[in-house]
Length: 330
Image (cartoon, rainbow, N blue to C red; front, side, top):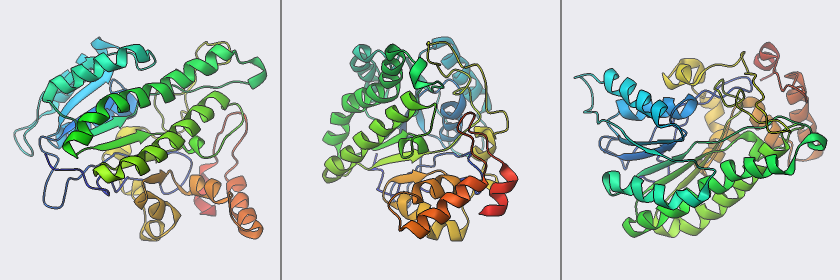
């Protein structure tokens, strides 16, 4: 399998308005090649965005290694993907599964060995698994802060470091990390989550620079909110589940299907988001870009960017977004 080149996971399908990012990741090998038979490893593959990535890559003929904590749910995903296969289009492969808990970093090395045994190599590693958090810092146990960091930071870097030597040896591979716009901008009542995503962003920025010489690109994706079980399963300050969803958001399937509302416009491609994407950073959407633009800009420009963010009605408590205001403001 040839190396996945620097722009290989682009373009990412972006939401053109609002805080919600609906997207699928498309990987292309060097010009003229295809995803057929590429080995793609996806963590958090039993639901949400990970499951949708599995659907897209399976349909493209990739050889999947689906990872998660629940073996039964992974088997269901495999059954669904196998049943969806058709005689037309690329030849598909029955996905392999590796069950392990990413937050238990002591098991990651063994899991990495199992992953490599599946096909002998990894062409694309998608670090997607994670946990969210909702809570007041004053009421949050330190153990909760540690748990979020174990899953969102130490887990992905442990798996990446375990698989990286095989990529370096082959001078081939592509590392993808699903982070968050909160890895760039910290929001109230998200301290543990934002801290873990800031750490993730910093680590993989360093990794990108260090392994460029080996021909292995690193892409960090920074979405806003996606309507998956992530917010439902978010932990609160005492460790209990948050139990609520962002019901006004769109689901990963809608954009994964390539809806026109999810594609970036030519103007957006020429703007901040597309330029940053070419450097391996993928900010979410107009609101995310406006948030990011408030940092490091001249005061007048920063004030204008902040005004646009404020027009979207972002609340420090529930982070809801007035979609019509965003549509009108951008």
